[in-house]
Length: 132
Image 1 (cartoon, one colour):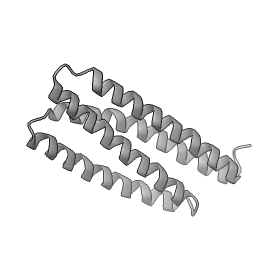
Image 2 (cartoon, helix red, strand yellow; image 1 turned 180 degrees about the vertical axis):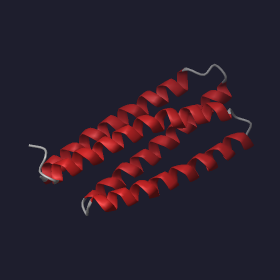
Image 3 (cartoon, one colour; image 1 turned 90 degrees about the vertical axis):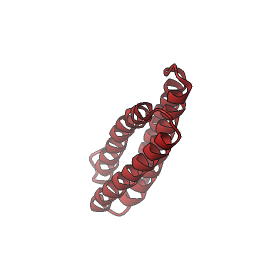
Image 4 (cartoon, one colour; image 1 turned 60 degrees about the vertical axis):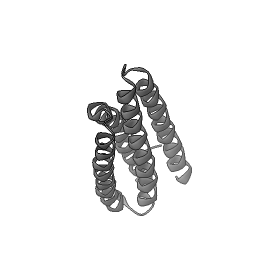
């Protein structure tokens, strides 16, 4: 069963990496204004970093139980909320595009959140013996 959990983690970590790379590519190529481009890249990078931390924390919590994983969901949400506020203040202070930052962050965040939820469900299902 540990092998199934490790396989599920690798799969979901790989999906997260693909989302981060695609997000960075879109952020670097889509905006026409350089300031917006930089803001979008910062937003995507911040979402990707918090997503990676979130996935690792959820993996560690799932080794304990599902309740621990649910607590980690709250912790990661708080971490992301602080990250969005700090990142948004940073880009606004430098005169960069706030809308591009928000679009980059949340565009990436929503995809990563889906991957994280999918991982928790797959790992908990495997731990319960539902995955054969």
